[in-house]
Length: 252
Ligand code: COA
Image (tube, rainbow, N blue to C red; front, top):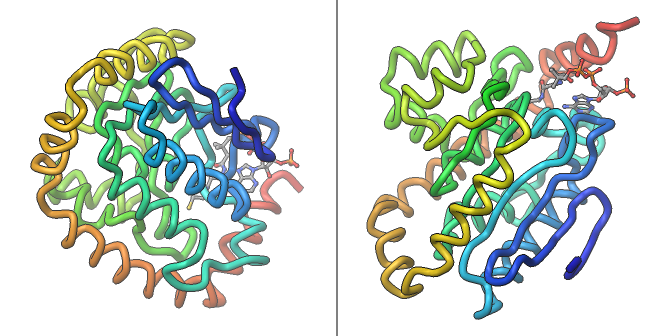
């Protein structure tokens, strides 16, 4: 049953599991300000609803997401902590209920960094994780400058965050950035199954366990804010405008 729908974000309920689905496949699910708002609202609604015991984040089409919508970056740069992207990231980072992600194809920028805040990540075998912030004259976001080196070590983090190299699904699994790799096309079903397993657990014990596993929530929130300051500055920079113009001109 479709509980609510906003443009390009579909919110669905499957019993105790609330699914937030990116649904803009013609633009590779590039995420606009309006989509961040809908995601933040969807997470808030899921957390306010006692019947929801787990959240699933998924995407339609061949790719999870091409990251931030680059047109929107220029037109609607995030302004401070109340901006939709920060509302979404803080809601995800502070979520007490378990969050499972199903990821296929390209997961670029925030498509990868949001996974750092999910509890279980299921990758299709064609998934590729990439954080090309520097190539766009940007800096890491979503506390990825803290969480990525913590998860995979500094050397690999530098390859991902400085060189901007993509990693494939088996590498992400081996490096501990994901829980499962499954044949492409079965990632959502597998993630939904895991979300239902989590949804059947005693909710208070699960929430406490999640909080303990993510013990450094204040440090993470502080890092997000610090990154956000640099990010906002870089969004105004000439090097960023050049990099974005180059992306849209690449097919011309
Ligand atoms: N912002 C806005 N539009 C985007 C976009 C983004 N991040 N990524 C893709 N699109 C749009 C393209 O402009 C294109 O629009 P058009 O059909 O009107 O020309 C459409 O989505 C399809 O993109 P295309 O690049 O042709 O798809 P692809 O399958 O060949 O490649 C990607 C997919 C994800 C590899 C590629 O789109 C890409 O690298 N996107 C940018 C990723 C990025 O740098 N994100 C920012 C991270 S901070």
